[in-house]
Image (cartoon, rainbow, N blue to C red):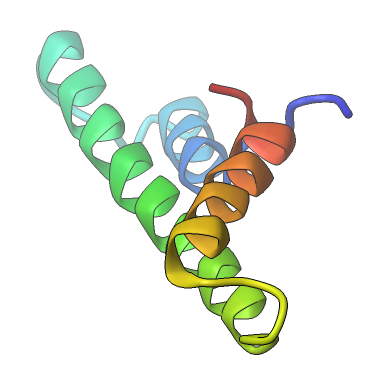
Length: 77
């Protein structure tokens, strides 16, 4: 599966292209990385919860593993 651009990356690139981002490029990179990590954790948590709706098939540890795998398959490591 090909890696997709996250909504966070899309927003940052759109703001940059329209000249709406000001300031130090290093600071923008830092903020982008923080936002991407937050987005990653949200996606993993949501996917994990999806697996937990089938408690007869998945325990918390397994569901978390598959939540991480889901994220990696969609967005890359």
